[in-house]
Image 1: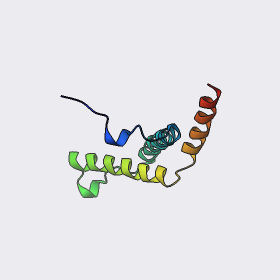
Image 2: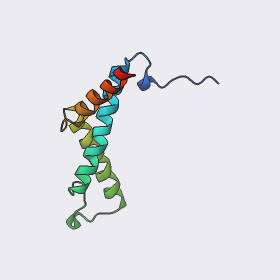
Image 3: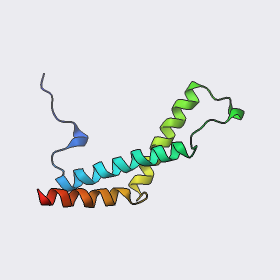
Image 4: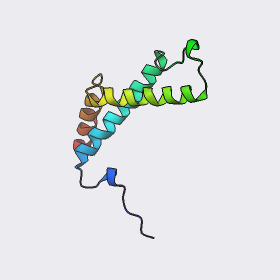
Length: 91
């Protein structure tokens, strides 16, 4: 059985594009932790809670953080991208 590369990790993307996407994903992870710390996604007692609600609220926070990062976020991905590009230019 031959294993090929994953379609979403295409080698046809430029190194800059892959680096930019990685910076956005890192910002999304950071934003998700910030949103969790702020209490977004915590279940309210009036809705009953439960394991399913906890799981889906966690997924909702992740999705919201990804959308925030993709739409500009707080600017962290741009700073990371520029810094990493400078490092790769030096090598």
